[in-house]
Length: 146
Image (cartoon, rainbow, N blue to C red; front, side, top):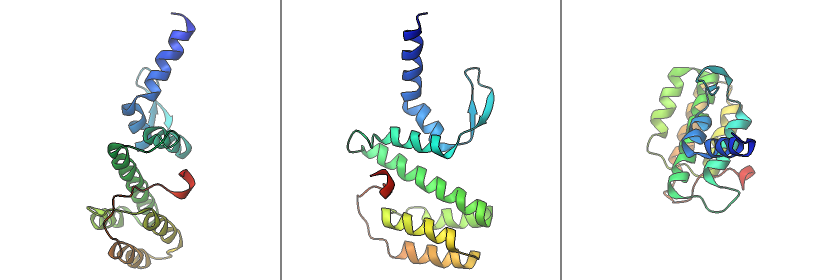
C-alpha cells in the first residue's frame, strides 16, 4: 500500500467522531492491535475535544455542544473524586444532573474546587453555584478555547 494511502487511512481514523469521543473520555490508549499502551494525556483529551467541536472552524452543532458539556462535567467529576473521593464525586454528580452549566459557572466551580480545603467548603460552593443558574442555550466553552 502506498504511504499516502496509509496516511489517508490514519487521518480518517483519527478524525472519526467515535475515535475522538473515546480519546475525550480519557483512560487507556490502545495500539492498532487493541492492546493497552499507556494513558491518554490531558493535552490529548483537549485536542480531541477541540476537534470534536470544530471550535477552530465555526459554531459547534447541538450534538457537539452536548458532547462538550458531558466532557466538561466528566473532567470536573474526576477532579472531585481525586480531591475528595468517590462518595463526594457521586454527590456532585447528583447535584449536577439536569443542571445546565454556563461557562462562568464551570470556571467558578473549577476554581472553587482548587481552593476548597475541606469537603464542606466544596459542598457550599457547589450549592451556591448551582442555585444561581438560569436556563440558557449558551454552550459551555471555556475562555481559553474561544
